[in-house]
Image 1 (cartoon, rainbow, N blue to C red):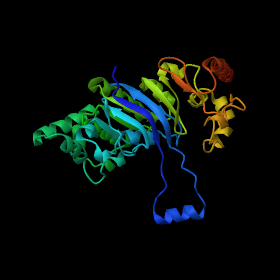
Image 2 (cartoon, one colour; image 1 turned 180 degrees about the horizontal axis):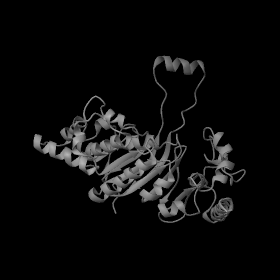
Image 3 (cartoon, rainbow, N blue to C red; image 1 turned 45 degrees about the vertical axis):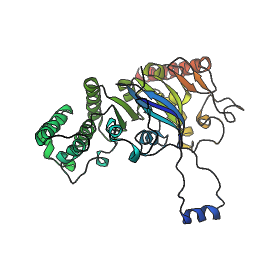
Image 4 (cartoon, helix red, strand yellow; image 1 turned 90 degrees about the vertical axis):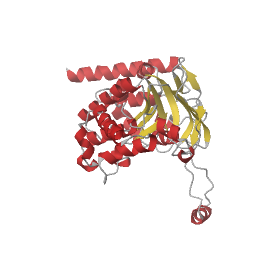
Amino acid sequence: MTPLLEVEDVQITYRPHRGLVSRLIRALRSDTTEPVPAVRDASFTINPGETVALVGESGSGKTTLARSIAGLIPPQQGRLRFDGTDVTRPVHRRSPELLRHIQYVFQNPASSLNPRRKVRYNLGRTLDVFFDLSKAERRDRMAELLSNVHLDPGYIDRYPPQLSGGEAQRVAIAQALAAEPKLILCDEILSALDVSVQNNILELLRELQASTDVAYLFIAHDLAVVRWLADRVVVLYHGRIVEQGTVEEIFTPPHHPYTALLLDSIPGKGEHQVSAQAEDASTAGAAPDAGCAFEPRCHHRIAGVCEVDDPPRLHDSETHDVLCHLSAAQRAPLQIRAAAGAAAVTSAEET
């Protein structure tokens, strides 16, 4: 299958301000250090109609990477291809057709919904930009979009502040769907919602994908949600992809030690391991300048190697790769024993 989106060796760095005052301050401080890339050497693909989850802790570079795909933050290095065409350019230099096919749903619906305008305006604006519809066609299409996200057509005359969090997110999804996109970037769209509402939105996303064949880049930090929704998972740590593979491969040892930590943080799984690792997490700070970025937090680091040498990218299978000095044969027994130990502790507590 030809990928819909190809991200190839993308690097994104937030450069310091270049104004006179900023340059003087840097000169006075003798600050000649180069800023650390927010995203480094990121490569992955998304196929038509597929859901790829991008997971990692806050500050790992997930949103930066998504905004680069949307054209909001152009990469300094690497390439972005969409439908086989190079789209490594800022949003203002992208064609209307490309803008239509890549839509963004933000964590906070207020980022995309004008609170002073009715839902009618927010949906109609997208239709007006991309399609030449008559008034009757425009009205019918807005009613259809609301129905598609399970909202009554009467919502068209409500203001965003009159909507619940789940309703506002449904309108934001409808606004993205109004463009009839091929790819929707879902940036932590569940994090501000109650669990019951999250489940409803997840069901909605799957339903819409089945009917429209739209692809999702689903950004999250909750691997429990990812397992239910995604086809493939990309794990990001300090701006680097440390692991990617199918859902089954990500959730079955051997995986990257950081993925193991994320899996242990799923509620009801491995709580004792999480508490033992919490100290490392609280003092992790910035990634080291050399070697493996996860080395300060890793319980299986190799002294004299992990803190010095960049880890190789190991291909455990055709669809699964891991950025680690430990081979699959070395990782598997460590993680299987750890999982068995956590299960035994949980079973003992329940009895």
